[in-house]
Length: 382
Ligand SMILES: Cc1cc2nc3c(=O)[nH]c(=O)nc-3n(C[C@H](O)[C@H](O)[C@H](O)COP(=O)(O)OP(=O)(O)OC[C@H]3O[C@@H](n4cnc5c(N)ncnc54)[C@H](O)[C@@H]3O)c2cc1C
Image 1 (tube, protein in one colour):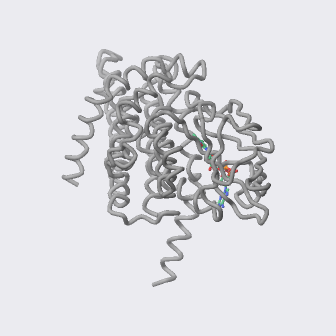
Image 2 (cartoon, helix red, strand yellow):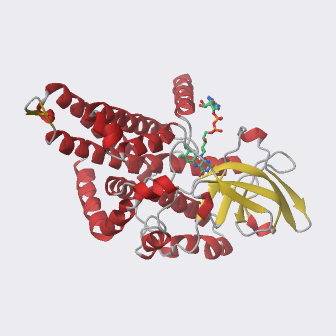
Image 3 (cartoon, protein in one colour):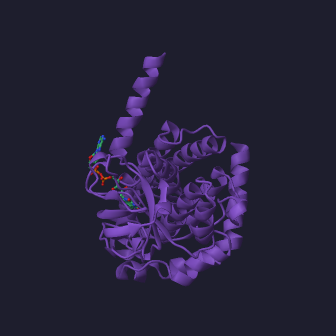
């Protein structure tokens, strides 16, 4: 753990010196953009790519720096600590995960056509998986037509969908098997519309409809068992999705201390009141324990120990960190009094945004069930 905390210090320094100004710029406009439902400015997303952030965790062969999962998770945590816009680390991590999955196809055309452009910020990728149906009853269908395919259906929520140039999507084929394929936003028959949500209003979320979209055969990146492909994406993303929120929870705790230290009630600083200190103490415990769990899972993935489809350690980390982040926000609201509700434009936004952690990348309920089932299965093997 000592070495891990040393690495954390190095990563904090790296993020501050390389991207601190960029993160401040993105944060500066977040309140207005949240109200207007606008994503981070395109020039700042481009700067993330031109300064190597989008490619940081990608292999050197595609222009990346090949940082390991522990370092990448810590980078995302530090971005969350410094950046007040939930969209920025989420878009970065989704695009990196898609690029990594596509890189693993080993196909030169896919690497040249998609992975390198994503790494360089020339192509925005999004995942169009979710429908209002379970994976075996998806309505999105793909059929053979001549040398290629025809795709029809509708995906209900794509983070960054309004910005997306290429969708990694998952239809069912004639045999009912899921496949994974790439669809360009400018393919005839692709329609993208804004998706409303409780939070994440700066992520440019969209729905995408495919009306008889003709796809050449080379757009298939998994010709069978696309469900495993999708689960790989979700399993990876499960860990990345909580890193930045944990960093933000740390920032919220520090903001609470600063605000409450300067707030005088009945002639004394509110931060000196024992009940307030107790709340701050519980927030601290939540953050430290969540960080220990997250770093354990990141180290485990870095060591190559994680299962690619459903890993109990990774899933437990997502579950636990998500619960702690939401707990910290709830306590912040209680301890800040009216200021938390109407005095700052930020806390309410975080509460709305991070409510999504209960749902995204595997609902908390499903993770509980799957973790319990894993425990039962393991006991059965003894
Ligand atoms: C912030 C955010 C970003 C997202 N980004 C994307 C994106 O980029 N691309 C994308 O495709 N999707 C995205 N999603 C959608 C997300 O992946 C799904 O909403 C999530 O996986 C849950 O699926 P669902 O909505 O179909 O839930 P449902 O399956 O409708 O779940 C409803 C209820 O049933 C329970 N349930 C369902 N199945 C089981 C089961 N087998 N065992 C036990 N309980 C079960 C669930 O726990 C839940 O309580 C995003 C969601 C959020 C909140």
